Length: 210
Image 1 (cartoon, rainbow, N blue to C red):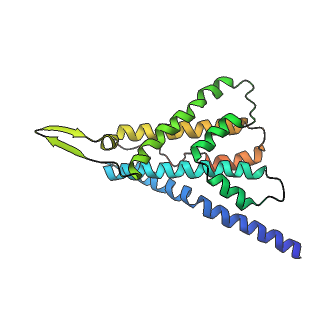
Image 2 (image 1 turned 180 degrees about the horizontal axis):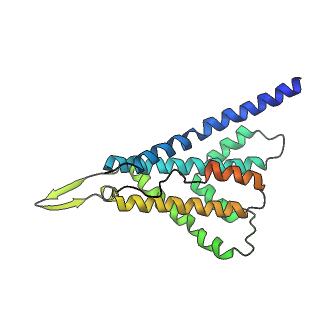
Image 3 (image 1 turned 45 degrees about the vertical axis):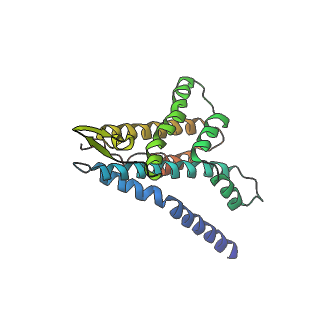
């Protein structure tokens, strides 16, 4: 009976940890979708959207790579200590190490692997606008005798750049999904869980109102 109780307690702990770690992904997907479905999006909507998308991507990739690493742990190693050490590595560095250092089977898919190598560059582009927003860069228009000049960040807050950022997001998710599908150290069952939990963009409408 005690063994059964311990097993239930362990499962409950895992559920609680999953709820805590997935909250930011789930809630920000909802926030993104609400903005994307709006007509006449404001600059403030754009700013929120860029930040929400970045949170989803960063938390998702950190969670994915942490789970892959923890699944290969030997018994006797403190998971929290390992998680702490992993969390000190940026999600971009984790992505680069994943793409370069993991064990993949690219049999018949080498062209796709080469194409999705662009994920690294797309990540740098994707992170740029969020970094400017959170570092307090100028969002300003200067009118000098009828000549209007926009700061770099203000010029990014447009529907066109919104679509570019969404396409970067999708490409990165598709790329990591591809690499995960070729990873030989993770079971198919675990992969399916990771796809739905971390690697989907179903929250993005097919038709986004302008």
